[in-house]
Amino acid sequence: MRLGVDIGGTKTEAVAVDDSGAIVERLRLRTGFGHAAVAQTATDAITGVARLCEIPPDGFESIGIGIPGVVDPRSGQVSHAVNLGVDGLLLGDLIHERLGVEVRIDNDVTVAALGIYQHLAPGSPMGYLNLGTGLAAGVVVDGRPWRGARGGSGEIGHLPVDPGGELCRCGQRGCLETVASGSGIARQWPTDDPHPVRALFAAADTGDERAAAIRSRLAAGVASAVRILVLTVDVETVVIGGGLSHLGEPLLADIRQALAHWAAGSTFFASLDLPSRVELVPQGFPAAAVGAALNSGRDFALL
Image 1 (cartoon, one colour):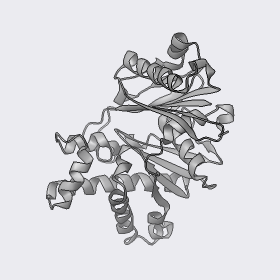
Image 2 (cartoon, helix red, strand yellow):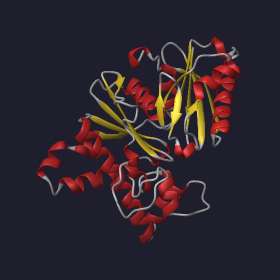
Image 3 (cartoon, one colour):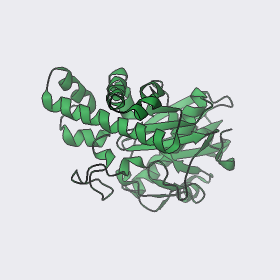
Image 4 (cartoon, one colour):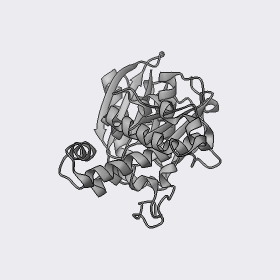
């Protein structure tokens, strides 16, 4: 069996998968904040799944972790994971010291893209857009993730789109993530509801004009991310996942409507047929955890 861990901004999910890629065991934990807490979360996830499988941590054929930020998969160093309070963390080394196991560390969206590519098997280039606490993308071509020169490929949430916009946690102003992410919505729509984006959509449906405007900005921001992926890499499909994807068809309809509106004013944009090239991750599928488990590191390819 292989073990995969997905460390998110608020929750961590870990799975054990068998040779076919089927999930055997699954565990969810709350994610800590800061170097020590994140390392402890990863350690607890590995030992917790090992306990469920009734084998020691070194009994897995491989262990992989997906985590936000810029990740060097060779050294296991995690940098600029602002939503986790992590910068310069040698996570692989810390886990090896604690558990005596080798762990492959990679960007969470990269491994999620691998997981969903394995699940959907599209054949053609695929883009994966993760809408969670933040916003980021992964691209898979011929079963391999596109990483770029320094591991920063896909960090499109930190593309500034509004010079006069809100200050992003990355230090820039008006980033796409400030309007098209869970944290962006929480800032614009303060609520005691444990699911602020669902609360926003419900308020918009009842005619609240402010909620409708924020919802519209969210759709436009995600549609912009879709457009960026297609115009820069020409992926055939953009699959949307992450916590916000649980909104389901209402979110997808909003995104497609924004894309169709832009197409109405541009023959070139209409020729791309973007509304038909966007879909959602199947509900309940832990793409990043599965992708981390299947990420062998051999030529950065799927098994």
